[in-house]
Image (cartoon, rainbow, N blue to C red; front, side):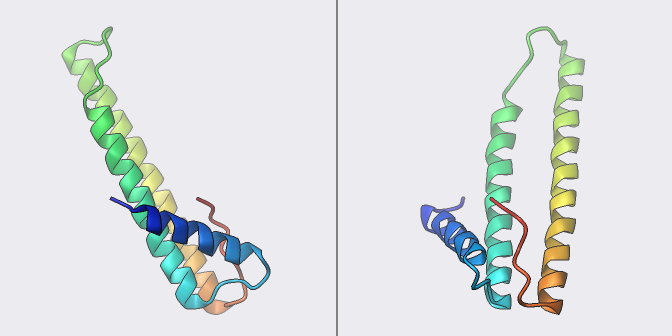
Length: 104
């Protein structure tokens, strides 16, 4: 579970990156770590919520298919975000003056 303090730090780093000063490599890594924790927290909460949802028009077998589709979509999004985060870290390591393009 992500805390309010961590969310405030995510926002602080975002604003710092946009104010011209940019972020240091250490701050970019912290930002990526905090964003990953935030995304994981949101996904976990959503997963718990979706687990208990049942569509009244679906039979039991079809209901399982809907849950599988939702899980697959979440995994695909996670993989895309992971690739994007990797590219940000690689770019920032090569050029510390480049600010992050991810927004949360």
